[in-house]
Image (tube, rainbow, N blue to C red; front, side, top):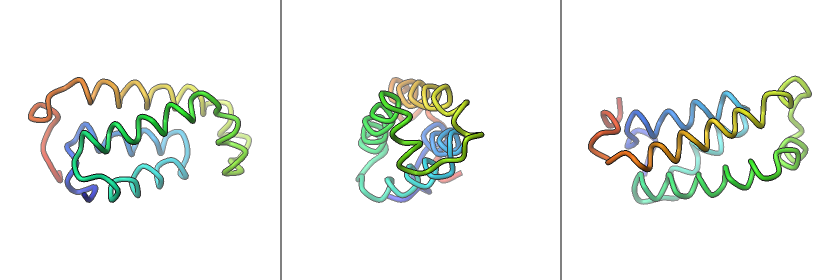
Length: 100
């Protein structure tokens, strides 16, 4: 699957990941190619984001993120997780247009 195949709500996950860090944005965008459909993609990135949320400092250290990103990282990751969960709860037909 390609990012162009995501609905508006699902695609917003990539933008929210970018608010936390550019590295996370790139990971979420690249992950799309590993999944055959949007729900599998969302479940896959949800698992990844949950791991990050459980230990944000490990992610920050692994990617050597700048100190100015550290303060807001955890709340932004939490917001991303919440959005992914919300998106999964919405029927696919109600998530917005595809490839907008």
